[in-house]
Image (tube, rainbow, N blue to C red):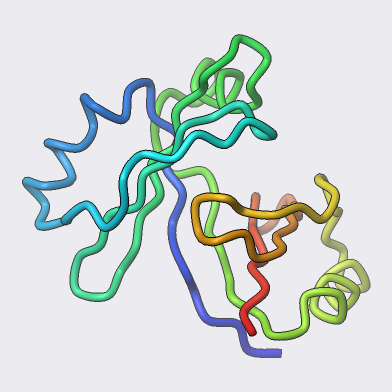
Length: 132
């Protein structure tokens, strides 16, 4: 199994305050801020030489991003990998010791493909993104 990185996710306290720092690093905004009601976050994608970062800000007190920032402060918290066969890839990773921590759901910030989050203590949190 060989997976390609789609983006790196950053939990931030404020997307608006973080944009300037990423722009200073050469990133450009690629879409408007999207509100993901299901995950209780706002999302913004930026790009620099083909590398995408996803800025994620909580919109509610019960958002999972809130606890991440409280524990770790703002910063990188997941890497998203592309796969053409999401179910098969998730099963392979489960067999290798990854735990599925979310159910399959749509990703509204990137035109609603199916995604799933998985975790292993050796790799941390990853997201699998189904590409067709």
